[in-house]
Length: 195
Ligand code: S3P
Image 1 (cartoon, helix red, strand yellow):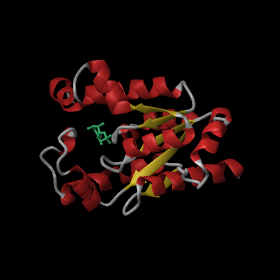
Image 2 (cartoon, helix red, strand yellow):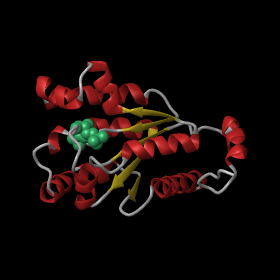
Image 3 (cartoon, protein in one colour):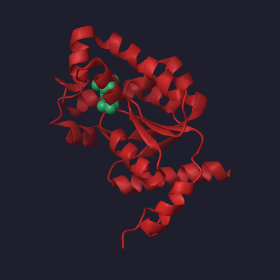
Image 4 (cartoon, helix red, strand yellow):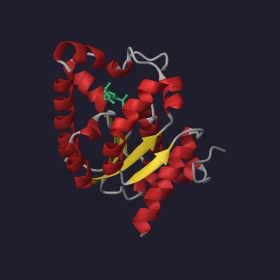
């Protein structure tokens, strides 16, 4: 029989999920590129029944271009403005898992927006882990000619304060499975709800 993260039979949980109270806020996943935000967003969605909003995917879909094409054609500032508008749009709803692009917490007004109506979860990973995960990826313009741990570490350090300022909780992903990460997040959220 298939079991859930909490070890309950899936069938029982499916029934429960239909009637489960949704949290009434958004869950926002933030963190450096390659920390697993999209994957964990899908896992959380499976576990909670909340819908996923993948910011990069939505922006690319609306523009009819890939992220590297948007950067090339219109520049980074244009992309950052699209992120800010989309974030505001998404925060007017609730009960969504929002997978934010890695640069979203860099703007102060985005932080205010995120905290308005969401729990912000920062996923972290070592530069070496990121490099390993993204070495064959070509969808991140900022890393395209910079695929080395030194560059990743430096950019990560530049962003660290912004990421940490935005976060309600910080979850390290190194050496953990998706399910372990997801279970850790759900435990933290449940503890906060009880507190
Ligand atoms: C970026 C992260 C990317 C994407 C864009 C810029 C960043 O998203 O938004 O390439 O500045 O960190 P992911 O974090 O989902 O890779």
